Length: 379
Image 1 (cartoon, one colour):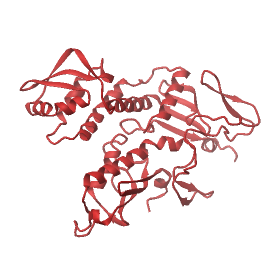
Image 2 (tube, one colour):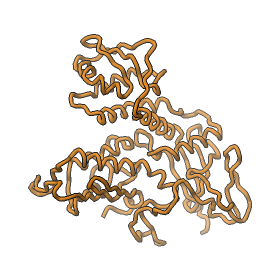
Image 3 (cartoon, one colour):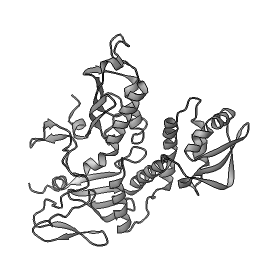
């Protein structure tokens, strides 16, 4: 129904809790659509088009999609029929939930967790959900193997008489032995062997070649670290040696004063010092030393009267994405082998590392069979 491209690039989702169950498939962000034409929700087996559920999935993808792109998914939600009114729409396409906030949060978190773990699925070297037979057709539709061990990959490269070893410095080299070393593992993204035009990292993996956009990858890593720091139970603030005075609109100044406590929970200490003025006294410690006045202006401009803490975090995330972009590795900066390998290891540990903060892919993998086809080997 959704096509082979969707199946090849889908991630299996399954979550249960609080009387709710969600299962199904979501497309990787790199395979988003230009229109919302592949979005299928089923509630207790009935197809629906519900704005609350659609918005929950959209919110889960906010960190990994271009703004004009749409996620694709087939998702099944099950719950006690008493918790939902199915007669809210004449055609029964929309429903009314007894606890809409809880349902929305459940769906959003489930999709976010699946997206955050997709790089770990890739590390097994297996397709995330589809099995393709020898003729290239789909032979089954199954979730990932639960027994596979994330973070490991076979050393065998599929070339007789060759295996990969690792030098102490972290660079990859080839041994002319007949068999791979027993019990040895190669990291999911392999080891760096070169940098191309000061932009791309070339890494040799167990499956073939991985090409990484260093700036895009570092941008995602920096962004996730910023988000994690902001979400700590008690964000550490650092007072500014010289407080900054910001000129804003009067409504923005009023809202900033109204939400001063929420802003403080995120590490920002703002005080209204005039009808159109705010004084920035402290910022999150992780941002100390950076010029954050533009970030604060955009943060204040996005406030509204009924803002909740989760909404403020989402607003802050969008601002932090630009901070991470400016703080990341720039093009044409030459990296050492150690620096490149350090970046690869950070990517393997970072959620959503397949995309930068703006939805661009951070890496592309070419398997040995794909490389062989490019050079007509074996024909």
